[in-house]
Length: 248
Image 1 (tube, rainbow, N blue to C red):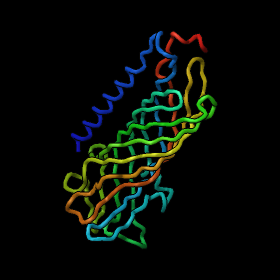
Image 2 (image 1 turned 120 degrees about the vertical axis):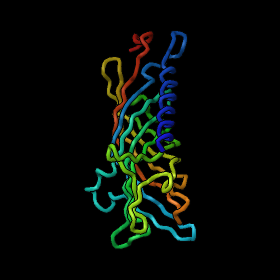
Image 3 (image 1 turned 30 degrees about the vertical axis):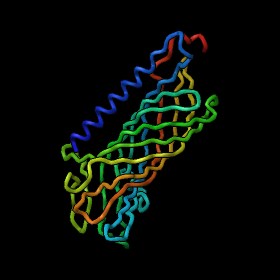
Image 4 (image 1 turned 90 degrees about the vertical axis):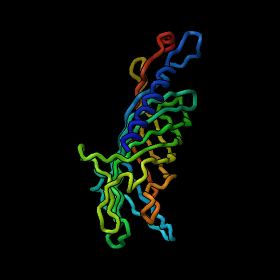
């Protein structure tokens, strides 16, 4: 798992460098100022765990938020991103971290009673923007996502499950390291003009669908994540092309 996590970090750095290189704009190029943004966001990740028996039958453990909103601290999410905007659309890379806390209802206990896990992900969102010239601009987005669980007792980040009455810490023998998801949703940018710079206050809602089984082979169930997330964030321009500052 640690090797996979290191690989994700290296991939994020490599892609970030490629975005940084894209901001060099010469006088002979089209006017593309304020087109590289960096930012951060945070919010709630309400993820369910869907189980399917290899012998038939299925059940879903829903996020703890559906049972008690007081459990929101166990379902938080946050991330940082780099984004390049073009007329009408944008693309970028995002590194995010979220906690999953899916539990079964007390009146309907299942073979798996709880999954509490820390998940680190890298996604590449592509956005289609509307009303880009207005103060408030809505958009739709879709993104492939690769992730892995984090289980480190040093920082009290333990990913674990309660399976058949037993507490099981996630590891290579109990959980798949690689997660592959697809995320899609809607958002809105509110533009904030400060001098030559244009900041963006952002609200975003998305749905994540797990594509791969995350349960180890020895367990008689397959497990996939699914659920929604809602975040607010702030994006700010990394650079302005000084050659075109006079357009403002």
